[in-house]
Image (cartoon, one colour):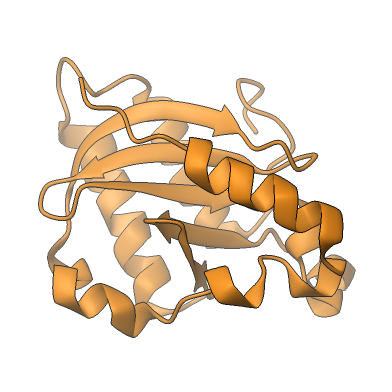
Length: 159
């Protein structure tokens, strides 16, 4: 199975975190606008497979690895609180990014993009079969956390 790798993004983040101000995470040069995904038709993506999750070396971020039907691998990143704005910290609101090719797209609460990702996760949890369907409950829970923005504190404990 082709598994998306967090390694390049993980290494870039680990190095960036050592030198960046917490308010600048992820570093500006890694941030991206959603328009960048227009050429790969984000609005028509579906999840081909869920290949698992990994922890970043940044003290708390967790990445959920997926393969899309048309645009290759991507990660839904539940960001560690160092990535959160002051308002997010005050509200204890989990921050998420979609990571593709080492570019970080902020998933804004209530946005069209957030709704699309939740829809993809819910559909994949219900329809994927066999190889690539490693944990439908985890995909459902990730969709719920995207919607309610509760802090993702641990994997395998109902996070």
